[in-house]
Image 1: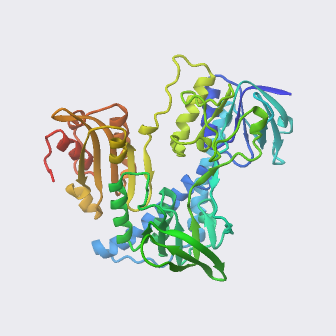
Image 2: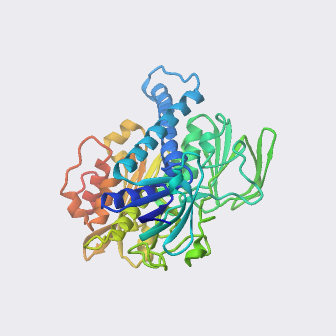
Image 3: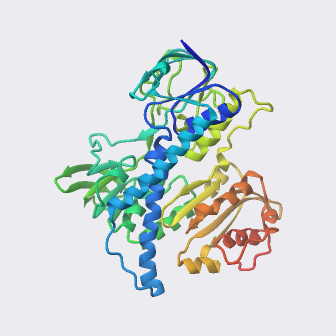
Length: 481
């Protein structure tokens, strides 16, 4: 029987952040990962997809240069092998970096499948010939166990992904070549990003969402502006539409979609990309041996959200295993890992729980969306009397330079005759993913528009639209619409 302070099961963003922080606090840490440290985000999701979206932005830039700026540029072809080689190099360098950080911190990484055998015990079964032979077998955790096994894409019943014609977000980037047409099922962040990517690369794209709007968890005005931007780029958007059936054939997939109104439509595409959500991975984890169960959706819910601790003392959960209000975002799992590590280390004062309302949410499509805090509807549902200001991005000169529309929307509390604390900020437009950090501080620090209005935003920048939105709410706007 081996002993250590903490055993982390799963080496994705939540798992390795827990391990790194715990090790820097002086704890002995074992991290069990059956595949590669970095998890879905590094190897199949966040990093490779954003690398490809950057390449897509470069492709779009060639069209803009020619059509808008008189630069006689043409796109001969996309060298798929060269593009994917650059993407894979970025992933590989990040992977080596994570491994280096873990090694430097003193985390013992074990390549193996881990399963709970009790409330403080774990069995690790090697999954690679590279696994340290002395690390296999039973382990006892003196302080606690952290479950961080992540999630996998949900599949459609009767339509298993084959990696070629029917793909999920995990394998879409690695499918052979670029399709001439693609049907994307699911209008959440993942589906929208992949629809945007394929359109930039020249594919005909149809995006189907069962809800009445894209990004249904975001503010309705975000959905409206995003949909307008995607349609302008030639993406067909079908909302309130449900897939009735789909059948692969020799050269593609034929699907029947029933829209909210009208007759069913038959759609043909070379590839069907299924992006209907992700499901937590708990198979083989041995939850029952430790006295744990999942909820009806398969999540492992904490009994104490302030510590992310389950009903079994000493067993904590981070990342995609957590149900809402956790967001299933990599940067949220970093915060969860820090919280759990500091809790297990007995840090005093007690670590602050994760405030999910102040976690930024970004969709890296073209146009991009970014938000933090409550939507207008959520604020009203929670009983707030709200004041709303929406500022077109084209109210500032830099947006005209980019040639793209969008908006800044601020949702704040009403305070007497004025405006109180800011509850939410919502952005649509170019590069808004790089603008949302300011809004996180505004919402997280309970700032009021007058607090923000005192600070000067540089000119000319896109961030001026954020500043102008708050100036207007504070009664000092220069370009009030």
